[in-house]
Length: 57
Ligand code: SF4
Image (cartoon, rainbow, N blue to C red; front, side, top):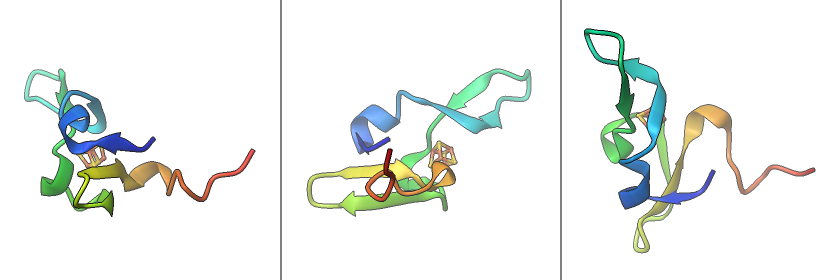
């Protein structure tokens, strides 16, 4: 899913949990899995699910 960095901060990460087992938000560029598609426009995606620009039906 291609998202803006601002929006990604409000999406849950499937990997990160708090010490009391609650989901945490995406860490965006602070995470090794984050990939920029257009850094100037601040668009990117979580690399865990593959590149959304290469997916076909
Ligand atoms: S980019 Fe990193 S922090 Fe964000 S959802 Fe993916 S794995 Fe989680």
